[in-house]
Image (tube, rainbow, N blue to C red; front, side, top):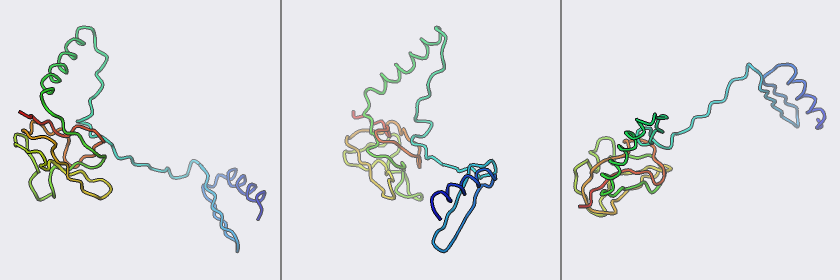
Length: 162
């Protein structure tokens, strides 16, 4: 079978409305699939890179009166958070607060931690990586959901170093 015969076969299958044709001879196997209406769709599932609660939502287009109110709140919380140290994810993966499902979390809000203490585990490519604290202090807030995907440099914990 030469290239012209294959091209003719492709044109014939496309015009016939068939979604798939398989042809096998002694020396060649050909499968032709067309994008006909009866063809099954291909499904692609993407893993979200950041959990919804962590990603800030864009504010709705405010009126001039509400713009002052919405800007005042983030400025106030940013001022409060500025005294805290943010522990960020060093890798992309799945964030786990516990070493295993039946164990307690590594740290809770209010716990005092030392430099080198394990705060969480991030699974990347079937490897579990301990994330250790780079500072000593008190855990103020956990910023990621347990068993959720995290991105590189995504904030995970707020630590009060005082």
